[in-house]
Length: 258
Image 1 (tube, rainbow, N blue to C red):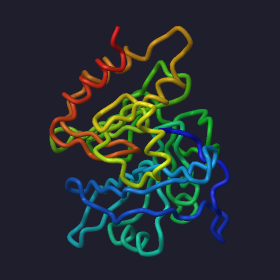
Image 2: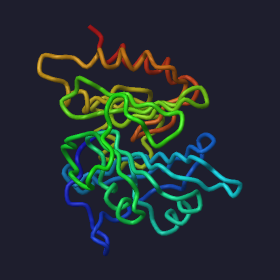
Image 3: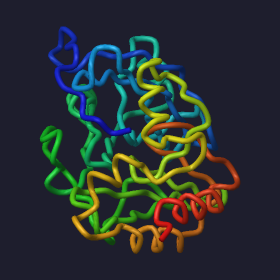
Image 4: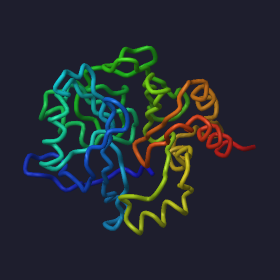
């Protein structure tokens, strides 16, 4: 799902307030996740959707701290923020998808982090971009490369972390759902009707909105399948561990069946 939230509740600091989320969980060495949520005010007051923040740590020292890169940032409550700071220093905030970014400005302002984003972000104009994401650009994370979708009508990228057999990190383009965790009942019904099956999927609404008229996004996904990865996590849903490439092949075949 990738409806754009409108009018989020603001905290006293003027940024969007923290919304319900779980604890920081470690997926792999120096790779962490927070399963959060977001209220989609544009869809109605009873619609809340799950969303994930991926945390990558570089240069961990003997005390377990290092430089942190936040992908799909999710503002945390006070206890969550304290746990985040225990992992290391927030140095970079990175936006992979055009429909995400509500909490990017908060982290850049609070920690003085550098902001990485594609050009011409259509939804969240702030914060100002320090590093533009494009094909062949360097990234603030060791062993990481950027994949750029060339065909959608709004910017979309993915990151391949070349560790642990390959971890693909996406925004809305490719999603893996194991349960409808952190989704309101009304949102669950809407997701089921829109094709958000409990497996790996090409984001149905993302595909519908961003496919050029009379065109197809399949060539981008064919290029994506040329990457070597065993695991996958997106801005929504859960980790696909070990079988991600095969699940992606099936998702692409279903989304673009002729």
